[in-house]
Image (cartoon, rainbow, N blue to C red; front, top):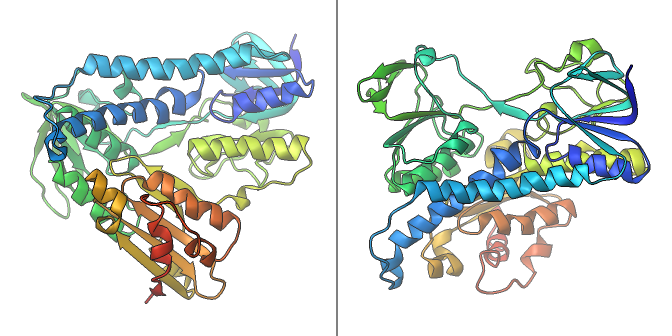
Length: 458
């Protein structure tokens, strides 16, 4: 016999738990299902643990640079077991916090196990059968494992298994030159590993403009990270010295032998074993669950939130999915995905903060636009900190004067970018920010200066 609930939530990432608590607060009986670790990717293998590792790597980097600031620190060494222990403790606190919140909330019942749709209104969890008129899918994603010749014969790491590493790889070879791969590349170089990046495309982080990609490459190479681009044909093999990568296609690159291999070529959604076909839930050609502007699937009473719907793939977009779902269901507030402005960060050092359209996208749109830029060498705050790598760039619609997009690659860029993001949400003209008096000395104070020197985008 099935247990009946008002709502079932599958997954405890950044959307599910908060939605469970919100629904339960209205008196609904809510079942929430987690098959592995509470908190999802962000808490366990994504944002929180990786940024904790980035912080340790930054500390090591600054300790080695101490003499630049007139400080004598002596030889610097990194204890990877302690680095991992710190990361584990911070991640565990978040994980247990999510689980404790759910188990301690009235009207919420927690099930542990793999969920599977038996019909559009019934979900199984092991031997248990649950039914509800409202079902929310929040199952997240995982690393893509590419079909490389020889991969089955070697050991490799992903962003998830990297969380178990408590030693220093002698030579970490990373396949993939985008956000995940670059963050691990820099942190392990700073821990003391030799690091090589092998990217199939013609440049790093191809989603960004060419000048941003080039600047990121220069930052990484300045720290001794080797970067190989255009590696279209990659094979893997066991070698006496570790793991070998052979790269030959349009350009023959030197064979690379590393002690450890990290695969960072993208993410895929965790929808394979959900039994979506039993519920009639539609997916696109990539396997993402198709949703409308309010996160509803093609089946009435079923919604998809977070990474599995293909609209964002970030912690902040997943949490916003919760806000959209709750607003529509409970507040009679018609919030929509299409109201969201694209924004994200790349957490190398210095970080990249990004909002809105890239310069390439603005050019392709054919609209008249203005552009402004400033090198971080002209930002007093960056000079004082001895962190002058990077630049900031902004694009403005020449007619409406609304901001179209911006990139800030530089110290504090992940925070300063919100000055621009909030103005975009307000649909205010760029002159609002240009005429604002920002605090000195900050990174943000150069945004008005940059806006005062706009030129036509040619």
